[in-house]
Length: 166
Image (cartoon, rainbow, N blue to C red):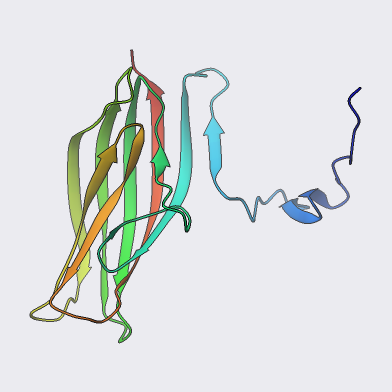
C-alpha cells in the first residue's frame, strides 16, 4: 500500500525537502535544470544547463563527467554563452550556436555551428579554444588551453531547444 510521506509545503511558495524552489512571488530558484514545454506541442521542449571545466577538458554538468543528454530522433538547437578566465582576471567570452541531430539510434551529429567572440583578451603566446563535442545521445563543449600553466576556468550557460524529428 502506498503512503504519502510528506505533503507539498505551499505556505509562501513550494519547497522540496525544506528547500524553497518557488517563492511567494512565483520565482523558481535552486533548480538543477529547468525544462519548459508547450502544452500544444508536446514533442518539443527547452532546457537550460550550466557546464563547467578547467584547462583542457570536455565541459561537464557535474563532477562525475555528465554531459547534456539528447533524446533519439530529435533536432536540437543549442546555444552556449561561454566565459573563460585565468587567475589574473583575463577574460575570453562568446557564444556558440549549433544545430545538432540525434538519430533514431542515438547517433549525434553537429549539423552546423557558429562561434561569435565577444571579448578575446587571451595573453600573447597562449591559446584558449572552445568547440562542440558530441557522442551517442550526448552533447557538450571541448575546451583547450595551451601556452600557459595557469588554471583556466570555463563556464557555459547552455540552452537546448529539442524538437522530435523522425
